[in-house]
Length: 181
Image (cartoon, rainbow, N blue to C red; front, side, top):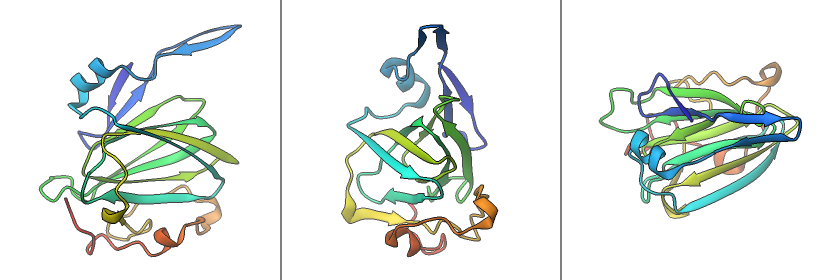
């Protein structure tokens, strides 16, 4: 596994070594000892799997209690995945990382605790799987507005269309109003 730094030190791209031939391919997608040595992350306790259609944007979400680190990847299709630093004492507070994740590039993104997370589907559909370091806690979930001007994420929108959002995400809070952790 190759661990690739991003413009925010703690957010890391993981790129597996893929062994393939005419029969197909094999790759190691996760190895606990190596991952813990590189990231210092707590062990994962929950796995999630979602499927979304083209133009859907999910996020930007985080929890103020039971904060979650997430290791995310796409097993079908392609997304633009984003992590926003919301750690109140961080020198990169308000900065973001955006990475294309796809079934083809097989990349994963490590998003540590203290980040809001979201993704935008840029293929006809996408299946998204991720591991979490804590359990889902809906009572403390916060949605950061996907197009907050202060954060300034450059989403690869289709012809500048408004993405398809849940009601929760339509009513996301601006960066200046969200609780930092």
